[in-house]
Picture 1 (tube, rainbow, N blue to C red):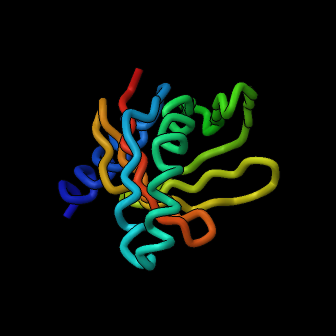
Picture 2 (tube, rainbow, N blue to C red):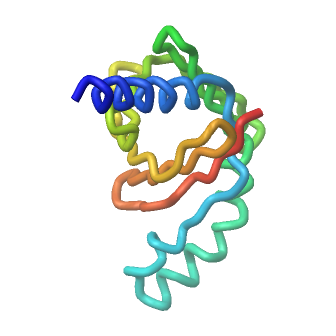
Length: 134
């Protein structure tokens, strides 16, 4: 019993340790978002997808061990930077961020020391951000 508890604590700690650092978006998977659209809606979204993906690829998220975070992006020539806090659930499957007083729960599909996949749902627009540690 004590061994299982110790192993669980180490696994949780390593998940949080894996998250600490600066992450950049490598690619964006929007296939789930497109799946529920009509052909006309799909065509419209697909025309914007390369621009949206390039915008997301400018994003960097830095998670610090003290539970603070910074998100930087350059959207259409406008640089932005937001600061906030983060926590990772004990099972490592939910990342909770708070920026500007707004809390967001994000599903973590993959987290290793070098790869992070976040499943985002922004106002019904479902997408996955595939990130690499810098």
